[in-house]
Length: 186
Picture 1 (tube, rainbow, N blue to C red):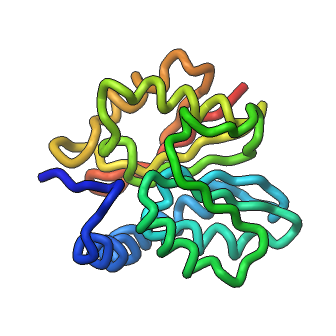
Picture 2: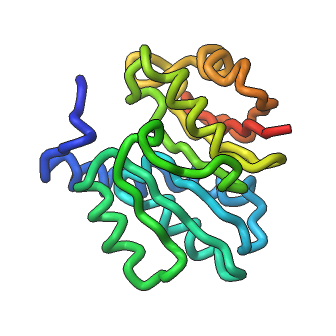
């Protein structure tokens, strides 16, 4: 089954907004621990979706930190906008990262939650390289991903996608058929 994430139906975006907090609760908790935030970091939430993770991250950024939420869907970004409306340290960007003017070395941390398996396979390498280019030296990318097809990507394939990007990889957390992975820029 395929969904249109650029222009989701109201029913789908409603369902997605309910599903993410329930299914993702333990994963988000592990991810937040792994991020080891001091509060001053610059973070990109790539594919912010309904903004569930963004809301958890922004609460940790109290010491001059900044959160940038990027999504292809204007409908989902509107949901994020409502969730983050009281925070002045959040930027929302609508568009394709490959077509935006995000300067290199902009982010200390990047989160990608349950997004990679939705991206077109023929564009994945190009998209990931654009993401990596925005990461600061010693920065880290954290990926939460389903690990079994058809609605997921095998772990070996995920590591292969990041191979050649100049990042080291490690498994942060694995439960059932979902994992959290860390990729560090050296």
